[in-house]
Length: 403
Image (cartoon, rainbow, N blue to C red; front, side):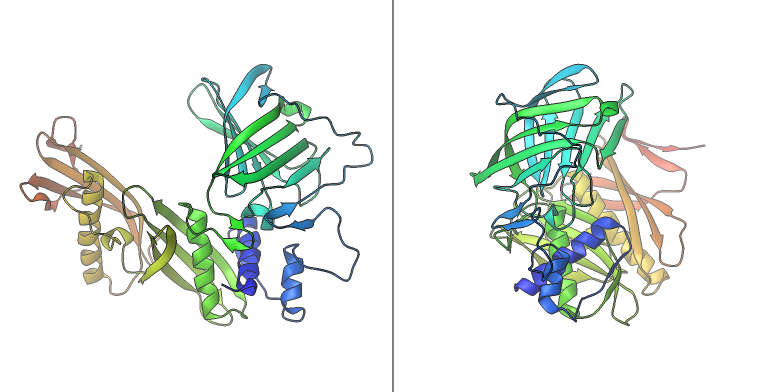
């Protein structure tokens, strides 16, 4: 893949991350240099920004504190620990997932802290990166997310974009891990601070030394490959209203697969929706085929389920095949959009059920259908479609009628 394609994809990521309806315009007058400038990787005739110096394996950034910010505090030398709403916690796990640093505490406390890079830094491997922000402000400042779990089990998420202090330094990448140290203090109202050293496991998709790491089992990998596929059709045309959705990665088992749906308009062409399926071979993800909009992903798996697969997988596959056939006969060439497969079964009675929620192109009202399956010597087979008020009770293995 050439450098121009990589830069275009990085720009797309910046715009897609900013909102669901991205509008992408190539800066043809400036050519590649203009594109590089847009993502902060190129040279400029204006005074260079000392806060955005390119690094070999990610962006190395030293932010300028405000005039009244005061001196930056020192990073503690002890293993990372912190305080949240007056209670102490120790960081038990650190992960760098697609550029985002995630800190999780030990014990029963649930307060997850995330340092989320912005724009083109989202996919950059942060090895060697240093960030120094005192009373952070500006569009380039990372977003800090604090995720907590309430007593009733519900989760809450608070985001901070400015007025926090962050010192964050990463060492080199070694054996899939990054050593690091940080100091983070949020605005007083947040009542959270954390500091110390950590060793983070690296996961997700990254751009390393200018090359994509296509081995990562991450939706971001599928997103990258999709954008690359889209650009093949018109690298110098405007990409309008781009939206990527239904990104799914099935990494369990010996044959990892994935799926993604993309909607967009290229140049003056009419808007299109394309569905891509992915497979991982020799530790590398790749696009293996494209489905029509009247086809259901689960009905055309990269690897057809066998009797050894989990009932959830088999029942969803058999239901998708049946539903697709019925809808194709009833609605010629109209898009099928499945929201959910819900399976239940009772191995003692050898009965299973799959309930599918879907809609058909041109109708925004979702519909639901349920299928009954029986398990025999040759495996699971479709028995019949259940009535609107019929459902399987998985506890007793009986078909019951709802009132």
